[in-house]
Amino acid sequence: MEPTALAYLGAGLGAGLVALGAGLGIGRLAGPAMEGSARQPEAAGDIRTSMIIAAALIEGVALFGLVICIILATK
Image (cartoon, rainbow, N blue to C red; front, side, top):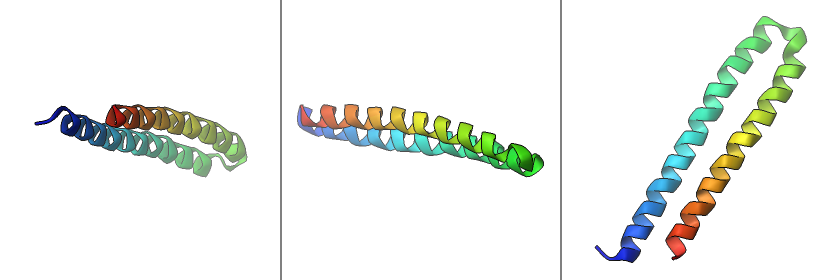
């Protein structure tokens, strides 16, 4: 295989793993948050705020991983 083809393959696999990891992370975050909101409706606002901050951090890491994959593919 050519080095360029390997870079594209690595970038594609990396981007897929980043997307999969972010989806799983947000899913593991949202489930307990919904359960906590259902059990304590008075704390729903605080739970929602914490969940949104954590989801934004997960998405930030995922975006960083995707940028690394794009840089890898362009070399």
